[in-house]
Image (tube, rainbow, N blue to C red):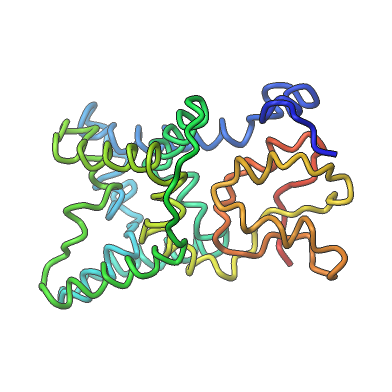
Length: 282
């Protein structure tokens, strides 16, 4: 029978604050550390990482390149430097193994903005929302890749909120801030978890990259589930939970296999029965 306690209260009573928020805290620390490493160079002259979240170089040795950025370059007829290609390979391998959308929940700075909008939406008890298909992000991804082939320019990069947020923090760019504010307002008033869950082309690409990842969330203790629904409410992609959690009678493995899962760990934190944990998918 469903318990009517507020979301998260059951977990707090059963596991305490750290047990209920450990993965969220680790995510925020990872996002903060990532941004600080990028800021150390311009602010303090300590260049551990040079570049930005689209293309960077770690300790003047290890290149990293955002796959969508390089895809646009190819489409625009721009041949990326060999270091960029190596950087893409490193990124694809890393996120391919861990689950592509780990990027979305653990490293993307826009995630903090959208999570904040979702938190405020809950506090204000805002329930109205338009219906946007989650497949819309794939159409946007296709447009983002096709546009450079037509225009010869990497058009999306002038609106891409990830580097825009980077520029907003470092340079205080008003145009960059306006893009981030628009996403916040969209998620707050128009579509619940709208940008990351329905529209973001980078999220769509990372979903494809993580289709065969090794690491995922498992529901090995699903028989202990008491249907409180907390995990469905906090999950940014709640449709991925049901097969693993409720598929025992259909002989479905207790593993979240849908690569839409961001491996954010909120279902693990929020579950007062400790049904979920991270593990190897196979």
